[in-house]
Image 1: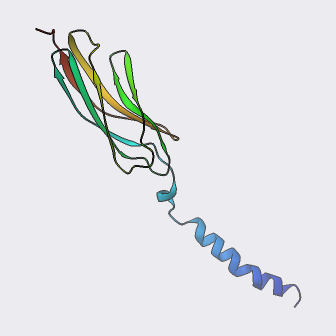
Image 2: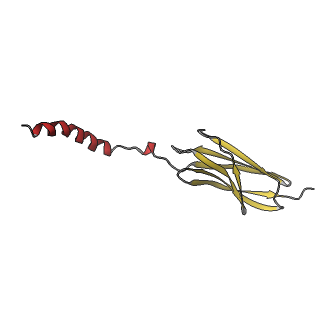
Image 3: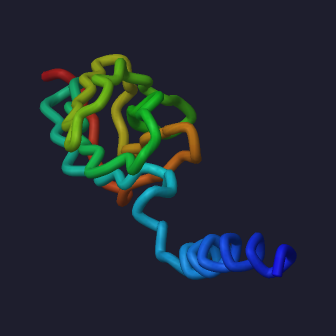
Length: 124
């Protein structure tokens, strides 16, 4: 009887632990951020690029910005916002057609939005 008593005490604990292992805990896991490229507008030699971080589940946002051509515009990050919209302005591009994509980086990884096209014209 002395050997059975500890087993009776441990049995409910073991059953509870086994049941908890099959629990869906995906909502608690960190994931790479979800980012969207909103648009790109150009007026003569200037361009305004806009993007939004839609979510960064359980991981702080470290960096966001735009990648275009052979360059990257890195922007300051506002920590702990559920949705963070950001924009960048550039006036240092030569005339021509460009493609840009918004990106966001957190502790898990880097994500990219859709690619948008914009044109820079000579100032007339």
